[in-house]
Length: 177
Image (cartoon, rainbow, N blue to C red; front, side, top):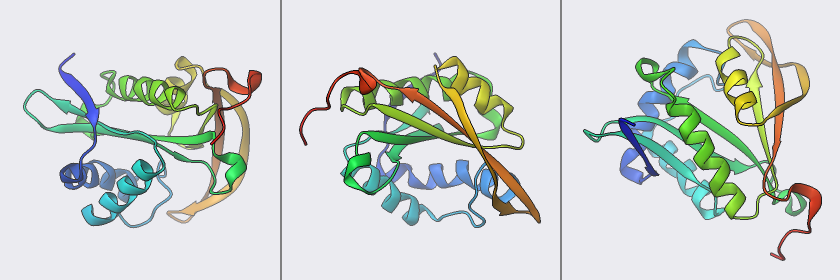
């Protein structure tokens, strides 16, 4: 591997914002319409970390951040506390090198260790074949399509839902919180 995975730090926010911006500005992979600033990324990162969930970066040997991934709470209500939603973004010039898969596997492992039981992926229904393939390789299965729930670049966009059980899933009661 020509990269290492590590916990994201606040000083990674400018690099993360730079990786994310092209997805916001030029694709329907992200449903945001304006790229968030580095300070907004820092606030989002803190929210994930305060929930006890992982936020990671892949870093090249020279210290350049190549990609990032995190798991956020699926929903704020207490009964959802063991269900997370993932996100992974790889710098445009670093795609198809296994970086996203390595990050996602580590996110899965970290979420399993903190007693998360289900992981969801909400994937744009247009131009996301690589994301669908990666999630499938990692054990996710399609569970449905939300039709025309996003509107960006003058068109309606579907969202494909995928789900993966973590650890014991629903086979065992969760630890008391």
